[in-house]
Image 1 (cartoon, rainbow, N blue to C red):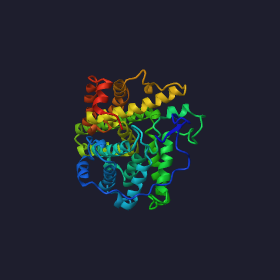
Image 2 (image 1 turned 60 degrees about the vertical axis):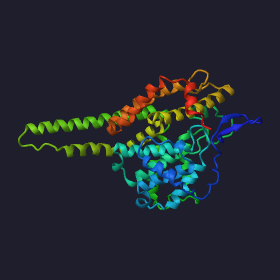
Image 3 (image 1 turned 135 degrees about the vertical axis):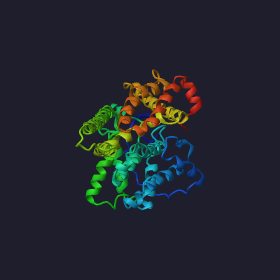
Image 4 (image 1 turned 45 degrees about the horizontal axis):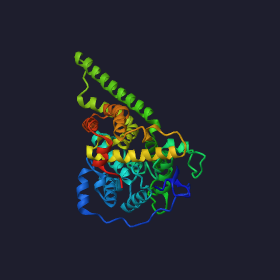
Length: 385
């Protein structure tokens, strides 16, 4: 991958961010559309069953554009299709060919967060600019990812080769996202006035930064607090209704009013909802059909183990989840579900109950992992090449 520094022998030595000066924006024609592939993918955009590995990159680009179109963003925020096409081409060109953090992952997260906001009921509470910011953030959330995580980049500080070694990956992704959007060859945001631009920028950056896994516990706590606040609000409303019914002079709140109260609570935390659903999308492999989840499982563990091998070769402490000598692919998947996604998704489901059926897929997948070995997984799902 391009995110590696290499010694004279050509062997990968240490991970690095790209140099501070960004590469020129790639200008290439918008690809022709494979109508059969596009027709196969379009009906799946609002669901969880799409397998991005079964589509050509050019088709994924057209499907990403279709998400903007289905949200009516070209009309609602005055975005010419040509600018969106240039933007998608530029994003695709900036993704490194990593096993996991690659353009397929970018598509997968963007499509999944779109499906989640639709299926959860959050979408109607979002403004046009919030919808635009969410999709843009998803597209750019791993821009120029080097194939190593923040822990590896911290360990290799002082080894040279990166001007970004004091920044988190997520901050780098955010920086590059806006460099790309304002580049004269993309010019995505020229239609925004100053106030709207800065509000949009804040939204996009906040959503991207929410994917920093070092902040996962903080977002879990916020999700639990928001869920409890919502449930308490609805409980108080029901008590008010019960009291009103016992008084002949009082007018009890209608079911519509109760629903509206819950909606008000959700609207007050719409931006938190964007962050929470973005986090779900970023770790959503576990709620995909098992054959798709298995492909992602191979790719993420390939990337983890490559990092661990690099750390060991450099005499650094090996990140526990990246140690191929102590970890198994299956064990990592089971632990990821048990200790990370299951508690988080339970809190999110408390806010968005409509996602319950989607989250149950994780439980079914967890049971299936019990019957697998690493050898069987790789044999069925294959490598990422």
